Length: 427
Image (cartoon, rainbow, N blue to C red):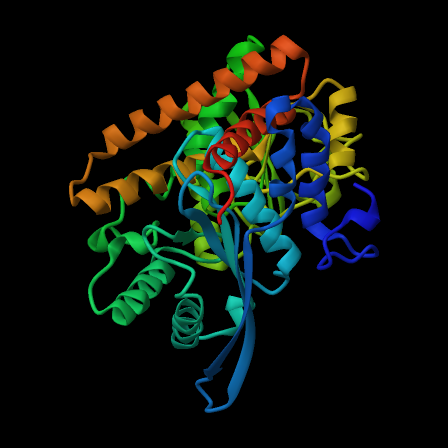
């Protein structure tokens, strides 16, 4: 896309994550159903974006202000769906890109949602629990006109959890004058949450990794796995790989990078991180430099941290057979091209980490019906949806010699634009 064509809210000097999403749309647009080409511009423009001021009273009595966002990228296929992240580096560009990826992701696994995302520019480590609750509740109040069980359903994301979702649900319910459990997903079980939700994103990563391994005749048992990010997604992915007989040989987060060629004890690492807040000093492992993480020979690399972690500076060093993207947007377009030239298979984020939104869909359905499924049923349904989506993407990629990311975007964009075309324009 030429700079002159960019929407007014994008700077030509600092395009940010949103531009990465736009580049991905530009690459896939010529491959879409020609009958849908007149509607492609829809994907380049978020439906609506909201920036809110979040003033709260701190524990010491002072007033502090934080900036929050909620973006609806596209709602042609259903209500908006996407997480809320609390992070000191959150920007509107990032939230728009994440909302765009949610649009594609929901269409790829064919759940009836559009794409949305939210965030607050705040470091939650700087706040007490009471202050965090005030920030959450004020944010939920400020965006209440955009959310609702049939409008936009937030969920947990980076640095948010079931407790945060409970506060958001309660705040929205107070405004409505009734309990509305379906306004958010990822809630505590006692408030209408779903079994299997906590591990859902990591389970989806593992399922798609397993499907890719089968295509390449690569056994999971004995395979070497390295994981960047050891939050909810990275930990669950590592645990499920280990349970299947793989060796998790390296884990990296902001506190350090630990390795053990014979395999790390994932549960022990998790306990150590919970106790100390750091990977440093974890049992039976060696601490190495952060940049050395990317050079470790392995069968599977799971980036489960922030965007753009795999870029032109490290893509040439990566020694993995398969990259399974647990994070949103962890690979830049430049790095994608390098990895493709090197024959490294990338299972893209819009498929690999769609397990979370899939089980969020299950939770939303269960809340509407007030009938809840067993964890076994949840996992079986999740595995089928993820495996079926993988097979469709692999078949398209194989037929037209496309990267998996391109094939996933073709399927997702076609579904979104078909819905847009069928609905037409109002008025």
